[in-house]
Length: 592
View 1 (cartoon, one colour):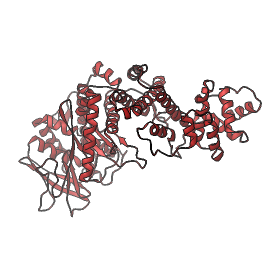
View 2: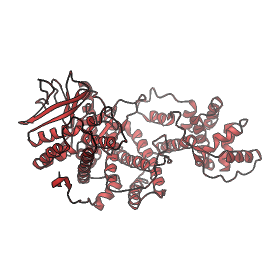
View 3: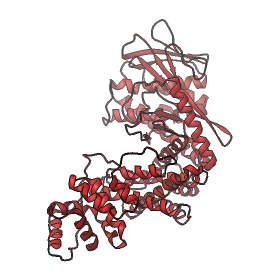
């Protein structure tokens, strides 16, 4: 494939990113042509990864086990690419092909371990050859590896061979536009109907919608072993009624996007190729993920409504675009230390993780800024809140990114583009004051609890602070605290869930929340005392300390300094157990 005789690589070419595309991506956008450009660059990357995998396999004794030689794979793939280049390109860009390539290379480099011999993963190249030959209209006979008695043909479906051992091989024939797998005397293969099953065959089903007047087709992948972010998975076939639920949600999501952001809907339609269902979280929160290996693919649990579905698609496609850009440019040179506060994560994040999160939420902010104009009256307040909260939290994260010296020159330009986009929303006046105040409180809530949980002032500094309190003296100037992540307990996120409940159109039965939190959101002067009573029951509760800090800091402008160093309050109380938390909070707020 694009090689000369003897498998020597052709002269390398380089992709040049147009400035307009770079700037559009930095602003969180990217029109359909920009996405097509990213697909082109990802195709180049897939070719390189395929070459690296096969070359490394050829140098690794026993890597392909009982399967054919690397030369036969090269011959089949080269012939298919020459006969049908566009079909070959689309096949190689199938998201699960990217996941397989990444997993196979990691196994060859001993940074990943599979559930079988190495050849069961690397041998998937022969299934790729079979699909490439089928799409190119070429005949082919080859051998493929079995995984749990089945073999996946990328983009087509899973051949299930009853009675075969979990590990083994099967013969595949491609002829006259038909693919068959022959384990014994009976052959199995794809049915005539594009999305129907057949005996021994589970077809990759599809999701369908429309964008910019054109059809959107996306595989609903519940069978490909390489559909996850890590090790291969067994199939988890969805029932027909579950597929119908995904279809309704997918179609509804594109209708929402078409109404508020037609360009984004069309760009997503150009780039999206597969969606993998995952189980929902126990709390009902929609789970989603994507991988830089699998451009055009995402994993998610079924959202409860079309708007949430649309937000989730936007979120993950932001990661997809940034991942493709990062394959072309280096935006940061950081050691990977998990040290930054990310307003949407409970754990500390490395600089690269913070960049990914900020970029995803830049897209989410953009979505809510457009959707709130079209939201029904009953949904307007929740939409305002989501816009205001995403804008605040993304702006905070972008400020952290901009201050980090590990950004490259390209990274600084990219982050500057993100900031400029956020600045354009700062004065648009579309959020009512009460809703904006609750968004500010929710943002402060997360930042405060993060600091209380993960930052640890030095014991000597805490003792000096306690001595200043007892002496009624000004506190000493304290150095920044050390990072000491506390990941032992889950966050409740009670206050932000309570806000969303109170803004809902029918807030009949809401999440359980302490009366202290209701008082805080109502601006009740007794909110601080109520949180202090919670601390009398549990002096170590991060949620109660956070509520006390917020109550004191929001009660008076002069006390807002407490929000800058909330991590001092809990260790100070450990030194001064006889003093009430409320008293210490008021003193520290004044002192700071």
